[in-house]
Image (cartoon, rainbow, N blue to C red):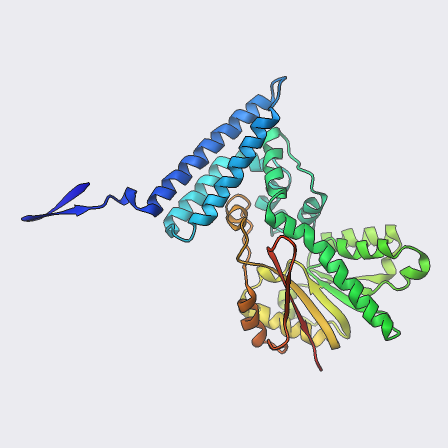
Length: 355
């Protein structure tokens, strides 16, 4: 116990370092430093004939997961200064191995200008750790096993199911469905639907899909693949900056769509811009048409890993956030449906244009 003099009286003073938050920050710093040293040792060991034993790699993986679980748990009580310091320390200590990885390196350096470009998403879907060295592949493996990565992998199947449901509803009315994907990226869910249709007659049922993206690389990838797989007539590329379109600064429009969906776009948009995008979507739907939009939920146990190791920052939103935002749009908030991917990280909201 320390004592502080106030002229004639001595009162006890609790040292700053004994407060729980300060103690946790000190421990986290020590854990980061120790793990970084052991990763470097593992990298050196990987270059020997014996390599890194599986039990050593498993133990390091366990410590990596635990570090970010501890950081997530402590984030509510740590000061902004402590969080900034820990973020900088993680970035500095792990950067050599992130830069030597595949997926993590692309997320950090953002060659397309943002973390979740179509090639990054394809790497998540491929689910194969890449890297120039053992430590780089170790980092990639930790990212790919994370709940956030599983949310990305899971949403592909969920969106394919929504497309197939839309296709069936339109067929019941004797017509072909029209759908649009916002921030379409590689559009793997559409190719999944196409491949499941099978024979030529069934493939005539493929929805007419408009793929909206500002990334010409993504649209070029989809064009080339659709031509190779024989579905180019069903997929139309729409180069568009959706932020500008939502704000009325371009003439880009959709019309008479049965479904307008997005897997990973709106968690880059701030609330006011998202409201404008919702109104743009509403105008693009036919009466009875639906929108299904994905957004990462605050209950994302790997949020700190994304933000510190990958510099992949999203706007996390929960159901109440979505109700509040939709209430400001032409959709309103009375008939929203919420569901999650199996990881519980990716929240989806469905809204319908009633008239």
